[in-house]
Image 1: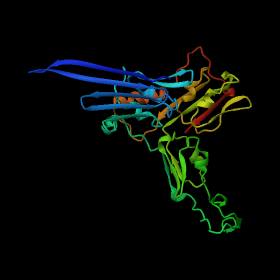
Image 2: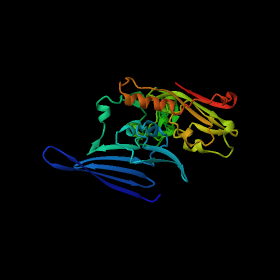
Image 3: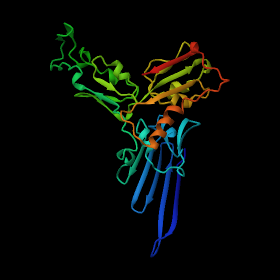
Image 4: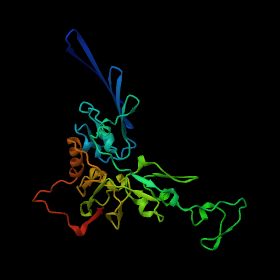
Length: 323
């Protein structure tokens, strides 16, 4: 995509009791295949919206939540892509609030704009995950001599290297579909901005070291009868890799879907339905804005079917209940 640049200056005149003043409002938008940058400057105050298209998972949460309908997810020659209508955008910070992977950020001067959150206009979202490193097994130290040594846990000789130690556990690092975890000399270190709360790491950890707090409760319905034999759209776009084709049928592998909705957005055969039943925040905020966001996120991907349309055949539908 070639880089596009929009620069506008809006001048508005208004009269005060003793003088005629001029107010200048300047907007600039830069867009290419990798990012969208939208900046508004009013005198010395600057607001900047940054959208990282490479980090974006095409989940549509920002599009659904935006009160101005300034964001949308559309298909182009490269697949799904995020777009911004800067004429509609008022830099309200809702998009950065709902983005699950920090692909959208909004800056006021030199810091993140969080006015709505600080004023209780939006509730605090639960922490994504907590890793109790003290519960992870402590590995045996590697000896200086490169010889086998006696493992007291398994009562056998093992090679003198960490990978052979039976307490060498990095299942979260090896199995996370998002690459959230990395191995360090002190144990496991997560990058929470990449986490989608899919709970795969929590299910795989044999030591109870990981706690994940999901954001949504709901169900995914997948009607494999509607899927073309050569189609891989939902498989390729799924950010937590829970969709796979087995024996010719597209199937949900496990109940660790993040309910992001990317699969439903990319499907052109209406074979996928994502039903979000609730947004799991600990304390609701009494504000019309939050009521609108919550209703949009829990209803937009759960459209009421026409009375003439038959419900999916459960015998041919893979479904997943997400607690």
